[in-house]
Amino acid sequence: MNETSAAEHTAGSVFLDKEHPAAWRALNGLGLKAKEAATDAGLDLTLIELLNVRISQINGCAFCLDMHVADAVKNGESPQRLAVLPAWRDTTLFTEKERAALTLAEAITGISDVVAREREGGHARKHLSDAEFSAVSWLAITMNAFNRVSIVSQHPVRKKDQG
Image (cartoon, rainbow, N blue to C red):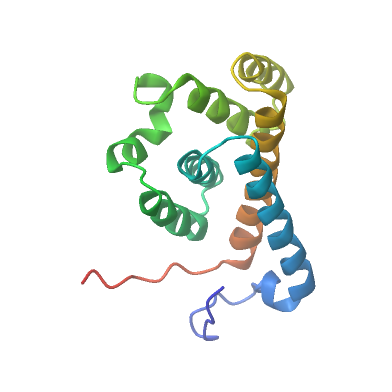
């Protein structure tokens, strides 16, 4: 997490990661274990970052979007697929496994819709092994937690040098 001056931080908010660093380290540890489970299950880094981006889009987390879009590009994701990710269901640019993982991640992110979660989870089960299903679930759970920390903390997105 980058240091931010008091002037840059919105009045009334608190950087949760700075206020309780042990809790933040524990969440980071969980995130690392979820990523490890995903790679152990055979999911590649491109798909992992694609899921992180999609979950962050749904949650509206600018800080996480900034970070994970850059990570996705670094891991080989195409600008075209990132551009159409909010409308992935309307394209043929994603594999069946990616579509199943995106379906499951969206269902977990919108967890209050029980009917959709059960339907989407059933669809994902047709294309993901038990290990993949569990790993995608853990990735979604942890990314949702990271989004909430950054949104509540109002972590800023800083302009990057383009040169």
